[in-house]
Length: 502
Image 1 (spheres, one colour):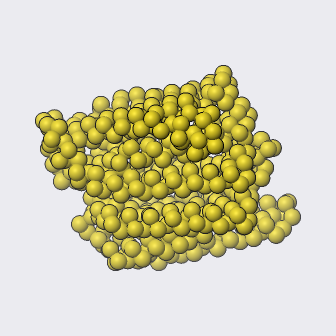
Image 2 (cartoon, rainbow, N blue to C red):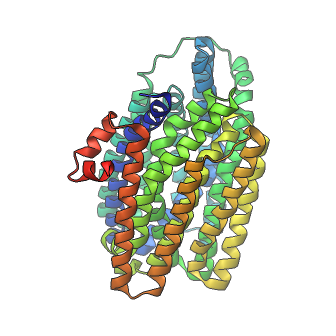
Image 3 (tube, rainbow, N blue to C red):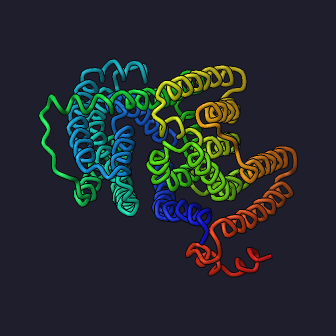
């Protein structure tokens, strides 16, 4: 096997492990979504989204971005075979996660009346929001354990933790919704956070960490480097949470809580598959790219490889979501969510931009260019809020979804320019062809679905999706070689070998 095929194979190996876990999570997420739609309705789905936005906003602020920056520190120490650096990073991470989590808990409880008034216009949900503080503490602790597992590139353990957490979380969430209805939303979130912490702690204990001695003074000194980059992660996460919160608040004020449920359903479904692909690839990609930070040419090669693999994996599923949106909404939700179909299609167009820009966005992080990352992410999160405000007021609820692809066109161009400046990055010929072909296919499908009657539009859309899926399958086999175990698995599908060898 050539070095190039081996590199593609490494990407597919880690992607297949995390992809299997993400696939199971995606299916279980669909189950949770269906039960939520039936048991708590559009209002309940809207409440879940609102609580999630509040939790994300405060949790991101409390976490200081430590979990994300620690992945880089641990991965860099592992690449240098520095046991002492690994031990110091892990101990520092665990101590800081406890401190920041406790601060987040206390702050949430203290501010709960104000947050309830701000988010819902009354103090009706004060106790529910106070309970979110416990979720923030548990989430902080779990995030620290998962950062250790990812930094050490123990992809198998990450996959197992994700699967187990999703299975247990699904059963507990459905149980609380059935038992308590709308009043079961917050207890379900608390139990889910506790389960995730227990599972993450179990797998983190299996990671061999060199023992080190650190005073609390030394801990804070060690934490300084994590915090510097972590603050940038935190700021970006805070902006993302703020965008989500502001979007939901604007929709609530202008369209009502049921419209929030419609928006949340469409946005969650659009991200379901793309998050599956990106999480499958990202677990190993970030620490691997960090290990190549000293070699710009090698970084650029890996970014192009990741872009190609990402498109080959994501395009079939995204096209299918675009075309089959009416059936997907009907199956996973109820008739009341039918207006989400149009939103879902626009969100899917934006998700294609996410897949294209995602590998490039990690270049700034792997190089530790916190200022570049800060400026880029801040600019486009502010732009997102502006686009949402304008399109919501002029086009109604669907305008929020139209803003999404507009945002990612600009973001993709921006991270490309930054990559060119930092590492001399250029998309390879193969990646460029894939990007343009994918964009044209998506636009053709969108035009067909919007302009033709239902039956011919769906027929043509399904045919295009099937053809694109076969081309993507052939592309994967070509990149990784016929001796790869994934290729052998693909060939078990009837007709797959014939398609790939034509």
